[in-house]
Length: 295
Image (cartoon, rainbow, N blue to C red; front, side):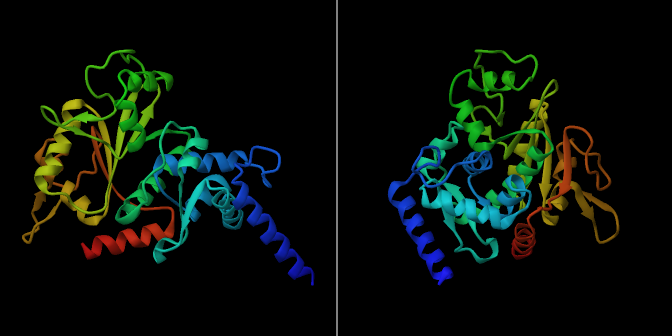
C-alpha cells in the first residue's frame, strides 16, 4: 500500500510540474533549482548535447542516479530535452528555448544533435575535462556568437586576463583564425590561457581531405596559434605520417606544412601537437573507435 501511495504521490507531483512548468526558483514550483542544475543547463547550452554520464561526472561527482533525478525534474519543467533513442549513447540531454534562457550564457537553444551527436559528445567530453582542471574553454557556439558582435571577442578575452587585446577594435577574427582572403576557420574549442593568449583544440574523428587539412593547418601557422589535435588512429596517421612498406617514414600533412619535424612520428611541441583521442565516457570512447573503423 505504501508503495502504491508513494507512486501515486509522485505522479501527482510530476503532473503538477508539467502543468506549471516552474523553473525551480519560485515558491510553488515543486522543486528547487540547485547550483549543479544551473551548471548543467549552462554546459548543455554551450556544448549542445551531453550524456547523462558526462553530466553526472561533471556536476554530481559521478552519481548517475542523482543526475538522472535532476534531469527528470528539469525535463518536466520544460528546461531540458531528454532522449534515449540512440542506444550506444544512453540518455542524452540538451536545453530547450526556456532552458537556454534560464542558463544565462547568452546563447539560444541548440538544435537537436541528429547525425552530429557523436562529435558533439566527443567535444563535450574534452571540454568538460579541461574545465575540471580549472581551464577556461570557449565552445564553437560561444566563439561564433562573440565574433558576430564587433568588439565582443576582445572584451571576452580581456575579461579572462588575456594580455594585449585591442579593446573595442574589430579588425578581424580574434577567436577564429583567418583561412584565406575571406574564409574563416572556427576551432572546435578555444582554450583561454590567462597571461599567455589563447590556443585551440580540434577533435577529428575521421580524416579530412589533405587539401582541407593543409588549409586549416596553414591558417593556424600563419596566425601563430597553438593547436592541439585529438584524433582517431587514421587522423593521427594523416597528421604525423606512417612507416612505408620499405620501413621508411612517409611524412604526414603536419610535416608538409612545416609544423611537425619530418622523418618520424613527431607528436609536436610547437604550434601543433597531435595526440590520440580518448573519451572519459566509455560509451563515447567505444563509439568513436567503431566509427573510425567503419570510416
